[in-house]
Image (cartoon, rainbow, N blue to C red; front, side, top):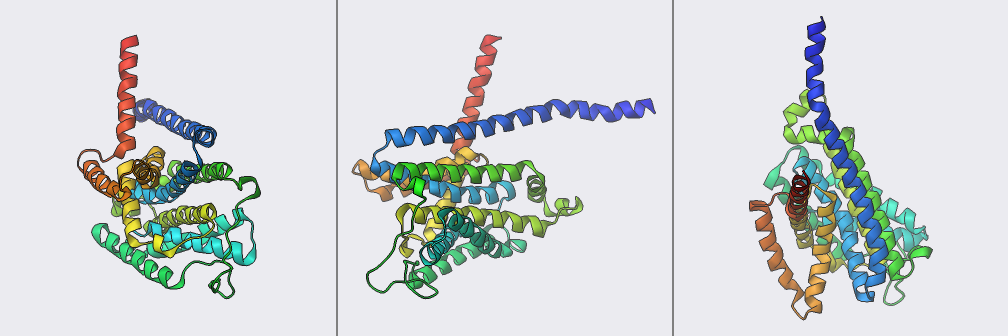
Length: 350
């Protein structure tokens, strides 16, 4: 009896240090996220002019949407090419509720996230039968359908009726929170929402949903054998990704006051997913980097007198590099380099 207990305790003693190291890595990751967002909230309003405040606000807003695409790809290996369309859904809902009913900004953002979450679950229904290229094509067609719909109807701008479209002049702008009416304060507001969304995703990864998603990615048969509801947890993931996109859409509408249907083409969803892979879908740093690549890099090229569309050529080369040699993305390469540097420093001290 004693030998049986001893042999059962040995595996626990073997995995104990590994679990402790994993927990410490998680704590460092969460602390790094908090410190980075706080530093950005303090430094960016102080360092940036009005042009770059608006550009970085847009970039960090899209990082909220990237977080959803990264969740699907990083946790489940699913390619969704309608994430930017869900951003448009969230923006439409936020504008309609703000301009038509005068709801508070925070309530508009949450409602946009919830309704985009429902739309995300609907978009994820094909994932129950399709995978890989087929799922990507179906979600891309959904993004194309949304592009046609929003081009025909437009976004609400304070008019009467269900669509809220004004005839001619008299267009209204979505109101920001009272404490975030100027651009610097609104940037801090976006950072706060980004931090909340990333914390929500990290909480999911560290709890039962994260373990279920890991089993599903290993194999649906394995997950089913372990008692995991593949249907439920896949729908949960698509709903959470849709919530991220909806929040991003509402923040985008609040940043500019109005939205243009021409900005929500299907190609934007493809670009968003591509840069999610380039930035790194397995770490919050990749999410932030992807948003900066989407908006800050073209703006920087434009400021230097270079056509901003040239950035797409760079992004294509970066995507090829990420797929072939750096599957963890830019964030993964940076973190691996930092780990090697830490190892060298420790070796030198020893």
